Image 1 (cartoon, helix red, strand yellow):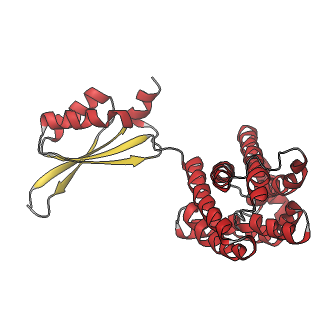
Image 2 (cartoon, one colour):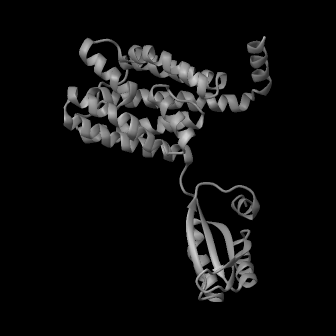
Image 3 (cartoon, helix red, strand yellow):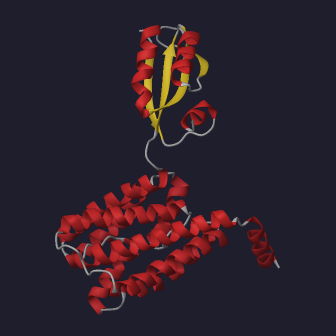
Length: 297
């Protein structure tokens, strides 16, 4: 009865529009991983770590299809993910991606070119970028192709470490072991691929830095705030502060602006308060407020 009730609740909460978008992300992500694996990784014997690297090793030693080998190894990992990463919501998304990727590796191998280049560096770069984008799309859909991706997501949610660092720790150790079979040169290239893979996955998951966060410490609070609002059309927030060295009272202004407007902020503030202290950081997304209204005009 509990299982039936959970499935009923899931159907009630299901949004067809979001479901279609999620399915497209899962499909595209898995297809990109298939291309990276068959076109760049297997022909170059780069041993990219994780179950993919083990699949290459098994295929090289026994001729057993690497996709089927990964699918068999994924069964206990799927159970672990089911217990720790969302149960049925995790299982539905991940099982679809796992089946499409693992079976697709063997099926699409008939039509994909068996390697475009013999250059290890080119295979490393393109394999890492294509595979990283595919993984990032799966992460955005709250899924993985299981394997060490499940373990990486568990570690990330528990520790807050970026996906790229988790991959280096886990898959890096596997690459070192597989270097004994394919040679240390391939292992070194595979480490580079793993690093590029993580960067591409993070970029796809979080998006580019499209905004800048600005902190301004000033004694001309009202004048600076009104100038920024008038010139840039963005909201400004202020709160009181105290300089711990001088003991004097100041105000801190905070706003978010487009990257192209950072120099304008410096110019506006320096015209009103040449002694103001400005710190510019970066952010990935801002919603609501005057900034959103300005961007959609």
